[in-house]
Amino acid sequence: MDADINFYFDPVCPFAWMTSKWVRQVQAQRDYTVDWRFISLRLVNAEVDYDAHFPPEYEAGHTAGLRLLRVAARARAEHGRESMAQLYAAFGAHIFDAAPDPGNNSTESNLRERRGTREFVEPILAEAGLPLALAEALDDESWDLEIQQETDEALALTGKDVGTPIIHFEPPAGVAFFGPVISRLPSADLAVELWDHVVGLARFPGFAELKRSLREQPQLAAFGFDADTVGQQEDWHGGSRRQKNDRSVSQNDE
Image (tube, rainbow, N blue to C red; front, side):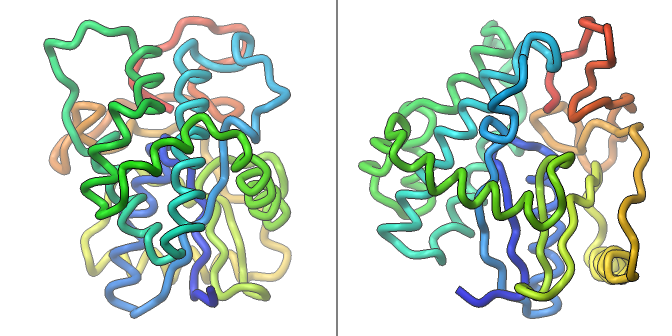
């Protein structure tokens, strides 16, 4: 598929989801085509000691993300690349755009692990107009090679010390970058302005990085925030909000 934008996503990353919503705003106004591709945080961190580097719920969440990507890979193989836009939209809506159930006393790890189950994914497939039988791919590791290849493809564009999403604009020769990491969804007018600034900066020869580690929790219902509420600001290190030698972390983040 020849697209204006290749967008590499892991379905369990809230920042990828927020950025994807922004990209859809830009897509609608610029008439861009988007190819929704895969990058697995579980495979990116395959050699990482999760207990030492991440909050306790991350491994369950990243593993669930890989399982969902297996379902997406099978859906793409059987129903075409055009099925990815609706499937990713349904993933994100169920994971991030629904408020937490106050009566659910499950641990955060259990909640994230559930995202990789048939019970969770079958309603999403139905909503996306796809066969429920695709859920059989959750346990099918034969899809992992394809997901790994696409993950490697994404990291080859930016280098390895990044997270999700990765955007490649005007492939194959156009600019690619990690992020941008945004916690708020801009208005329709500001969405295009932000896009032009990001692409303009990325196109500057020799540009590599513009970064701050302070992040607001994203304005997503799953985190208890709406468009009128600013999320708590946290200082991130090495892809998570856990600091070096700090095992005390808050819940509900990626």
